Image 1 (cartoon, one colour):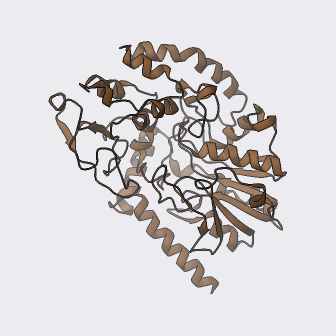
Image 2 (image 1 turned 135 degrees about the vertical axis):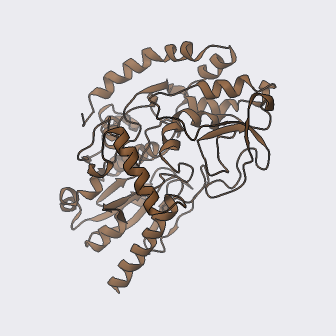
Length: 412
């Protein structure tokens, strides 16, 4: 029976590899991965994620009742294959009691913002507690039987990407219930720069809980230490926190994520452009949802069609049941061949705004403020400020954050 269980999970995960990397096949994915690694001067395969360093954390889990915060990216790599962390822990005799799932669910199939219910994982029969449904913070009852909680989720280093908010709420709940937290670190593919507007405290929420820039340049393990060290947990509490570090990774390393971290981040280009194009989430402009080029294009039916030679029609698909501008011809730009950027670029939001004849159709004011972290960005755009002028206004807060950040950096 154990053999069949392992075979079933290996088969499932092999299929997941293919689905996660598109329809071009394993060979093409490996070729692209090797090429990008050579371009960046760093071989992704030499980086060892913390989940692979079982000798460092298994002794901390043996004989304990364990909860795991995980999704489809929570894997242990074995060459070009991988097994899910939860499956591996079970096979190694670790007493995993339950799984906590973030936005998009445990297997990563739910739409952005889609409520996810509690349930039972069909692969392991473990109970799944959704942290994107009835509650986003575990209750004391949900933590009662646990001796330790393991957090292992791939981040992309953008403030409004909700996994760091889930991390903070996990740490907060565990601090209140005296349950230790073990974070298995993973590389942040956008860790090589710090940029963007800084979240203002009065606008904080699930899209940004702390006063940090849009791109904060830290691994999720470093960020966990910052949460603790800066006393960002409610009431100034500190979590009993252990971070298992990465090996052979620096902030300047290129890292190819082999599994979609969420349904609408399908490749390296989308992940790199996400901090910039994610601002469109606070507008009525479509940013590629409902196509196969999510966060690699933008457009809208209400934008000036004469200003563009590119158009597309969003339709419901995997990860986007109800995309903006569904079924409408969107005029805009294709960015799928954009070189790797090291900044939050406003050029595309400014272009879209300037080519929207009826400006009242552009912003979703509350949504844009939540994504930008401040109402000032919308005001600056509406006032006609240039990108250089807007970015200059970010600098004092960025310099302030970099000094705080430096205290928690674990890697060169």
